[in-house]
Length: 140
Length: 94
Image 1 (tube, helix red, strand yellow):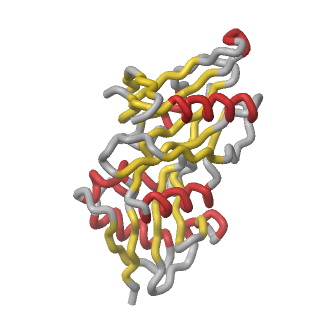
Image 2: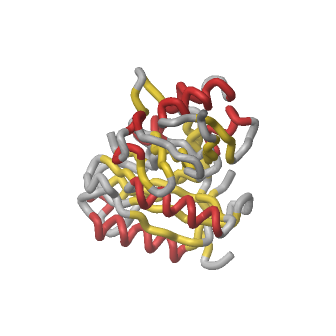
Image 3: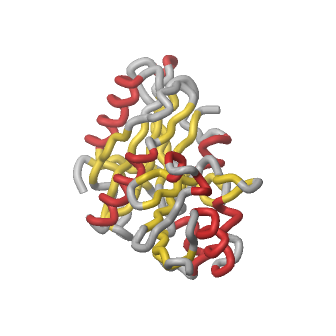
């Protein structure tokens, strides 16, 4: 299934990745349940504050799911950055991926890319990774 | 007598609960609650525990508090408490 994502959100994720360099950055895009519409970007704090690992803070995680529940939303996109490696899920990413309905988006802002970036999207279900096309839109 | 506690189940574990988002279980402590869950929903316990300890990348909350700050498996439960299970959102480049 294709990921459809707004240009403004791609720009914001890339900017967040650069701002939090060398740590990995992370966040979600929420959308109405079942809609697959990545509508509301919500950057999250990387509680691990690490260049090789990210983890949502446990309190933030609970607040996020409660907020989503109240708004009848779900996590349409779960994104994080790789600041030194390519935008492909690592073994760790695959092991911990636990939202079968989410698009797992990886953005790489590694140095060789200079001012450019790489953004790719995957489904990760039961340890199996499937890359999917990405369609970047100016508006829905 | 053990009180009944509501437990909220994340999407990834709903195959164990016939797709129910919330189920009930009994227990005076988190450990008892997990045994009760596993008795009713076979296999669920193993997704929460590893070698008798809480799995590192599963978060369990009693009301608003992460059980890791409440004594882990010994965390006490009282009538009216609500338990939420959420998989950690985590990963990394290695």
